[in-house]
Length: 74
Image (cartoon, rainbow, N blue to C red; front, side, top):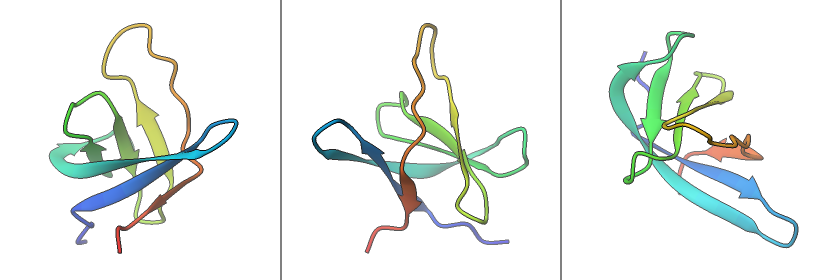
């Protein structure tokens, strides 16, 4: 199956939305789906073919938040 090269992860804060662009890596997660990460390597997620997102820790003491949505950039 072909997976998109990029996704936009949209996170909600109290007053606004933050968008983080993640790109597909060569790695797969525990569910067998591709792992995506941002340019810094800090934001990392496994994204299924149904658009389900599982955030992955990239370091210790991270407080992982689940995005409101994962969408393909327009």
